[in-house]
Each structure stands twice: as structure tokens, then as C-alpha cells.
Image 1 (cartoon, rainbow, N blue to C red):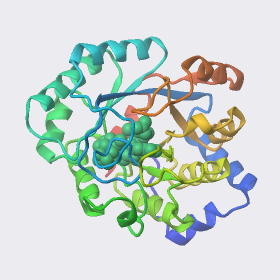
Image 2 (image 1 turned 90 degrees about the vertical axis):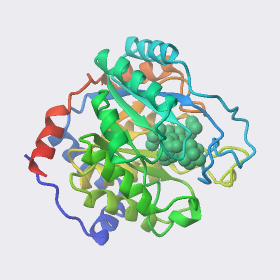
Image 3 (image 1 turned 30 degrees about the vertical axis):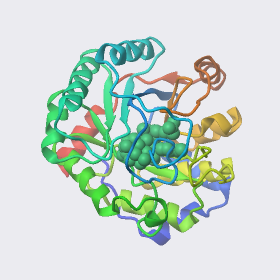
Image 4 (image 1 turned 90 degrees about the horizontal axis):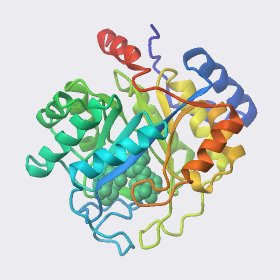
Length: 330
Ligand code: SAM
Ligand code: DTB
Ligand code: SF4
């Protein structure tokens, strides 16, 4: 059983600034020690409730206050969600993430529908993750009882940079929700976005905060900003692939047992760039031609990439024993 080490911010920053190939090599060694390097989890995103969100997250096309092309949809019928999950499973996906453009979970009929979706997908033998905004410990427990495996709630950026990106809720609110998910026995998925104009210190500050959580999150998504017209960040230049590789490699070294997810932004990455991300320790991708509202590489193109790189989709719950050990030892 690996004990998570306490890193200092400076140590993480020094890692991040290591000459690139040396960093990738180090990360690759850690990856090989703790993970099956030939396996990458295929996850599928389903936007169960799209647009019209009251929050002001500067990156998000679903915020009602920005003028984007996203159309508002109410909660999707459960059968439709299950059928999308079935299709994803046929394509090799072992994890489904249900996303809702909500500020927070409310105890109403829509939440009951989400509980049904979770039950249905869990019964199919897939890992179910939800990202529904803030939630209480009681709501987290209801989700856990319905069979939810993970709760996604991103820190997005460092505590210092947070107010430049979101003002309608605080960093402490985010940490509290993560704590509530944890108390309910759910695994935690929490990461952030690079390419929003933040400094290297901000990227590392976020990683530092995540690395100090106990237990450490089982899953950390690293998103490259998808700059969407109409949002305050529409003019942000694309993040260099080298920054993405550095961020993934650094995360891999700092939290060796965590699943590092190469999440949004792959449409602008070459296959070679993504290959470096896998070498540096990325454990998963979102497959399917849409993320929540923005485009993603075609499914067939990703399967071709898996073939070329010699990667296999990972089975569901392959990390479950690791999570149970972590919880027992926490
Ligand atoms: N409304 C819920 C919340 O914010 O917690 C859940 C859905 S929200 C879309 C989930 C995450 O998607 C955000 O925390 C953010 O990290 C990521 N995200 C949203 N828009 C993005 C964009 N344009 N580019 C990259 N990541 C994005
Ligand atoms: C995460 O960190 N990235 C995913 C998932 N968690 C929910 C979402 C990415 C969304 C990208 C923008 C969009 O498609 O709307
Ligand atoms: Fe709403 Fe989530 Fe988008 Fe923020 S990231 S505006 S909370 S959907």
C-alpha cells in the first residue's frame, strides 16, 4: 500500500519546470510502477441537463449570462440516458459521467430522475460518475445508495486565481462539496483547466491543494480550455501541447495511484501530442464526438489512435481495490 507523500508547492513547481523529456521519463517510470501502461479507460460524457446555468464560470458555454450557441434543455428522459450509456459500453466505454448545468443539487423530481439513471447504469456494470454542482452529504449518500461510483467537482484553478474565473461561489464551497462526497463513501474526481490565462504557479497551486486531500482524489481530470465564442475566455490562445504534457506528467508523479484524465481539448491535439500524454501517465480519455456541449474527436479516430499506439480500453472497476485500501487506511 502506497502512502501518499506530502509535497511542498516548491517541490511540485520544480518538478513542473524539469527539462521536458526528463520530466516525461520520470513520470513514465512512476506510471509503469502503479498502472497498466497498455490500458486507457474510455469514458463517456452525457449532458443530462444542458445550459441555462446561473453561475458565472468564465470558461463555460452553459452559463446563462453569456451569449453562446448552447440551447437550454431540461433533464433528459432516463431511457434516453440509458440508451446512450449502452451505446458507449458497446464502444468500449467502462465509465459514464453524467453532467448537469446546475449550481447545486436540489431535492426534487429531477434529482430522483438522476438517481434512477445512476441505478440503471450501475446495473450495467459501468462506473457511474456525476457532476451536478454543489451537494450536501445527504444528497451524496442518496447518490451512493443508488450505486454512484464517483463524484466530479473540479477545483478548476488555484485558490489565488479562483476569483478571476468564478465569483458566484467560493473555493471553500468547492472543497466542502468534495468533502461531502467523500463522507458519503464516494470516490472523488477533481481537477481543473489549463489555458485560462493562469500562471504556472496557479497550475501547481491547484495540484498542491488536490495532493493534500486525504484520501487523495482517485481521479484528476486535466482539461485544456475549449475557448467558446461568447464566453469571457473566448480569445484565449490554445494551450501549447507541451504545457499539457508537463501538467499530466507532474500530476502523475505527485499522485502516483490516481487516475489522471486527459479530458477536454483533445480536438486541438495531434495524435503524437496525445501519445506523449499517455506516456507521461494519462489513464483515460472521453470518447464520443461531443463532450458536454463542445466537439471532441470522432470515435473511430480515437479507436484508430488506440490501435496505432497499442492501447486497450480498460475494464470497469479495475481500480476499485485501490480505492478500498485508500479508504481503510485514511
Ligand atoms: N455544473 C457543474 C459544475 O460546474 O460543477 C458540473 C458541470 S461543469 C460543465 C464540469 C466541469 O467542466 C467544470 O468544472 C470545468 O472544469 C469543465 N469545463 C466546462 N467548460 C469547459 C471548457 N470550455 N473547457 C474546458 N473545461 C470546461
Ligand atoms: C471534466 O473535468 N471535464 C468534463 C467533465 N469533467 C464533466 C467536462 C468538459 C466540458 C468541456 C466543455 C463542454 O463541452 O461544454
Ligand atoms: Fe454552471 Fe458548471 Fe458551467 Fe459553472 S461550469 S457555469 S456551474 S455548468
